[in-house]
Image (cartoon, rainbow, N blue to C red):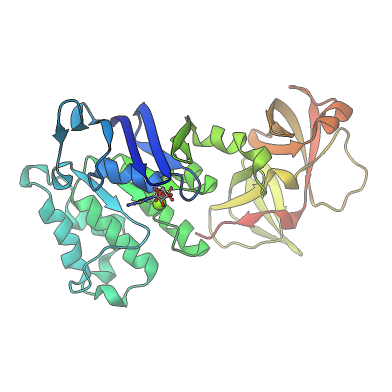
Length: 352
Ligand code: ADP
Ligand code: MG
């Protein structure tokens, strides 16, 4: 998708201004609550009229003050998924899904109910009443209805915020399927950096109604490390665990990690904060941390009062966070060898 957004919108005490042109199929809109994210998507969808500006999607003008164009929401071919589902409670799952399908013009119906039901695993739910579904199931049906309308762009406005942690991570693969399985570009709105990294490539960062950056989700997470209480969250792809006495051993690329948490899945993802990695210049003689990894320093970066150290650990990447004094004392420069110590309990296996 190619999107050009040059819009302004005023509310009492709030001014939003965005001027951006971007290409990409997995785009994020990131910012704290009240920064104008929903206002922005409302203008894209056509529910909200900009005070001035222009919106172009794939070369088509959706809105233009100078050319007096304001395409109606139902003619923009932009679908939305919200934090709270907007399903019809008087229809069962099948009919809610078919509502999306019927909204799609006949010649554009390239996605069919059977395929959608298979990808989103909705088979067992088709005849159920909406009111009998769990929050996560309702969100999957909302997503399905939006996909069946075969939009040119799908807007997801904090679709995970109302769900608990376990459900959030279970639903992410379904949300990603919008692009990977159905080829529909999306704009994903969230204030979570981890969600941004799992869902998007390009990110527009907003603060107080102003666009403060256009970057990659990875770069955004690194930039925010120094100001974030949880630091930079490393996301590690782990293989199948084996029992190791009181701990569990997981393959991590060519390396092996000991974790206190169990998982019975073939693949798991674990979080590890940059703050939980301690660096040593030499191999320490005795240490209680159960993981001691020999790493090569790839690069250093500055964020706030912290230095991020990007490490290569047997081909895997890890970001550790230190202060400048530590960099000086340990002589950390690109190419140097360090030992990274991590406690088994510092990893958190993401629910999946
Ligand atoms: P976000 O989605 O990032 O949390 P919003 O776009 O919902 O932020 O809101 C941005 C600001 O605009 C807030 O201060 C909000 O109070 C204000 N706002 C949003 N919609 C309206 C409206 N219809 N009328 C007046 N103020 C509004
Ligand atoms: Mg919002």
